Length: 210
Image 1 (cartoon, rainbow, N blue to C red):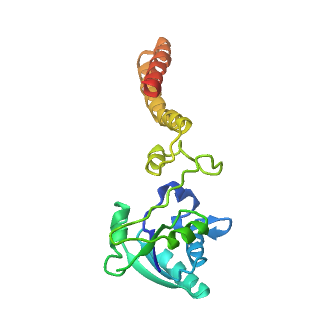
Image 2: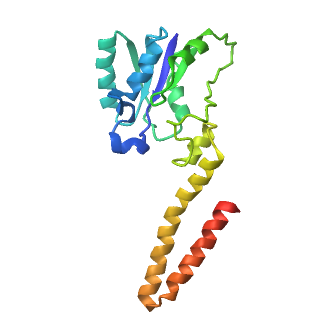
Image 3: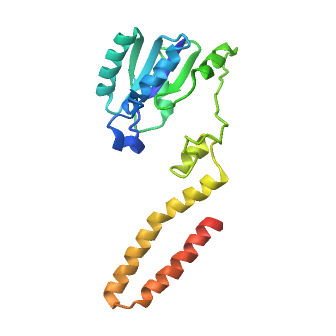
């Protein structure tokens, strides 16, 4: 079975760890190598990898990796990498005309998931989606860092939603404080800061509990 891996995006949330998200190491092994090796562990050796942002660096790395691991890697290029992931999937439309495994270059999973998926019977026009319902995983950030991602992955939680809302208010606080300080600078009236405290407190509560 063939495997399509999406690795075209910029990965801005991990930019402080490197300029290529798929190559960011986890326990000294790049994320995309972990994904590929998991797939190889269940017998997959034919990979189609879609690159885009900083693609040349990633393709060069993968070519060497494929040679060392005796893998077949076909490169597909998505020059519109800043757009939705679906465009990356479409890059394989003319290359793959059979059932295949679709993986993300930065999603870490147990290879037993692939083993189970490959045992399933898939009818024409049908897909099987693997969803993680384990909300108790202590090493996964369920929410807070990016609530929208958590919602898309069905990994929301009551605390995570509240925490995400709290974090979003920091930017509002700094903006309002800057305006307050400017008003104080013009009039040098300390009561302006009292107004800011009460005003922001009301705004904060309305955003969290409305």
